[in-house]
Length: 181
Image (cartoon, rainbow, N blue to C red; front, side):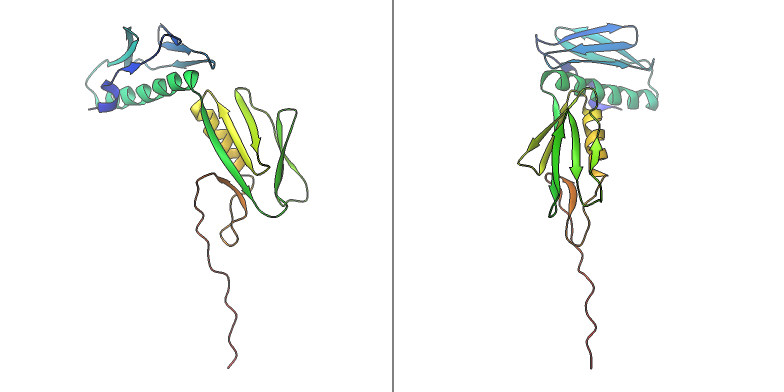
């Protein structure tokens, strides 16, 4: 039984929602998103609320009802407010620059690494060591942030690398010297 899927999704007057068959389109001040749903869930719009009705009482339909409710809710939040992730670069000589919308990272390699601009994603640099990745699509924002982090993950001995803003990196103790007797 999906408890999340039964909850209606409320939206404002500045957001328009349309359902054409199994495709739902949500547009707002930040942009427009669409999602193709399966036949397990039927979408219904009433009084600025989106309801998801499942077709049968199978447990699979319960799961799809909760899944699509979460995805559509993220779409509504995305077109009205947007999503963002902040990354922090730590390390001596590590820095980031923005050139023509692309990120250029100097993170300890012999060459600089360029992250190409993705459609629907905006990069912003704060204080030379913070990157703000923002956009309308929650999944795309998270994926781009994860791709940037994977370029140089934080290492456990000094903590150098690219990490999420509030990420805690547990540091390991280094090798201890052998004591002579």
